[in-house]
Image (cartoon, rainbow, N blue to C red; front, side, top):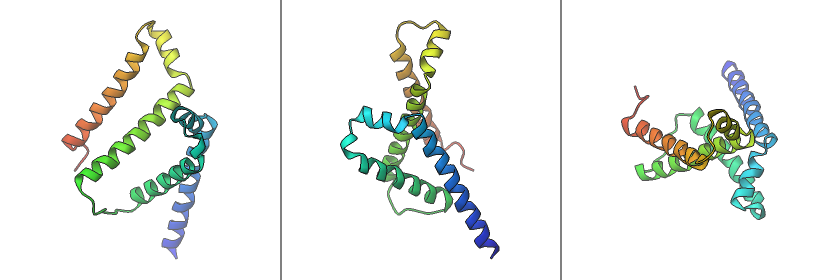
Length: 139
């Protein structure tokens, strides 16, 4: 009975957190921005299904210690897509809350703003690849 109550509390907490994340994404217009940039408005049902499936799979894979019988290449592709999603989410969030214009104005940057954004993305990518290659964080 105790394990059931703990599982119920964890499941309920997950719903609350997931609801908060989705509310943030919808409230800030991140999902609509993704759809607008990718020109996938005609596939809105598929986009919604993909978001839901990604949330469920992410929850299952981080909650349970599941071993997927796939090769290192599939794992790499999976990681690439996860990185693209998280990077896109962060960039959309930064764009929606106007982080870059405020940052550029305070730093006095008037030219080359697109290069700064590209440099940030490349730096994030190289840092992630170095982390995975060096296996930092592994015990």
